[in-house]
Image (cartoon, rainbow, N blue to C red; front, side):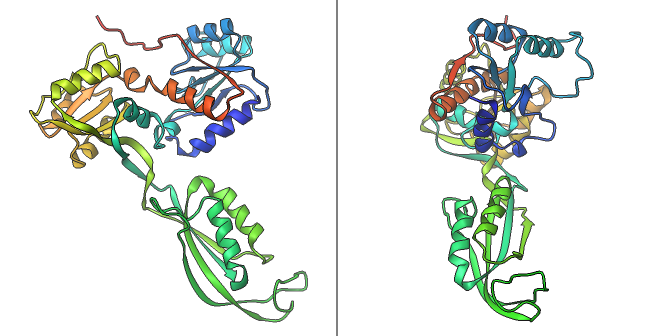
Length: 364
């Protein structure tokens, strides 16, 4: 299978445009046109993981954390990143990473944490803004249904659990084509008035290209009049963290034991217990301390993430219990998530889970 086919699958599920500005998701090393025999799935790429791929005869590594975050100015093997790159190149191993773009989708990293905990009624904790756009296009009445259907098929018109959403208003459009035109209606060189429908619909930013192509193909005019607006509306299907509920309330100590067992924690750092039962749980894979205020506002009983600093634990203020289970621990099931997605959607492609524990933090 070619790398570009595997990349296309991931980037349809979690488009690269969803990643944070500091991130570097996507193909880290390799050639999109290259055929690969199989993939090794890992959270992090280390030299040991490269050795494992060599031993197992796998020529693609798919990781959550990218190997390359900043610029690489030389390849002399002076640090771990350079040694990994050199060893991968020498052994013809490609590397692909799906990081923060996989964090923000509902079935992504935090979604898998919810699944492991058996949470119900799950939703995005902090929906993103700036990822929704509005399209306005003017269509002759005779072709309005055809254009609408093309837009909906291309990914427009979804609001929450509703699809095929649009606003339509009839009016009169005018145009005059010059001698180089072949107008759908009217005569070139003469002013023409056509009864038209103004169609308005929203769409997620990542489908913009395919949406415009579908619209133009369905539209009868040589020149299609349309506008695209950026919206500040929250997009409930995209964002950081998740919120869910336990089937039955638990005592705080009991829930901490569930966390420790589920995420195989060496230790859990937590804020003071509140004495209340646990029902609503907020969480975020990786380093999610910036979402604490949102978790409190949503009246969560627990907030689970990693990488909390000392002073941030004071911010719980007895309103919530912060449970820092560790960065690696919170994201460990991302390997299984990627594995399951590939097995289900690309069943003929060989995939194996890495057996290397890449957690750099040890507990004494």
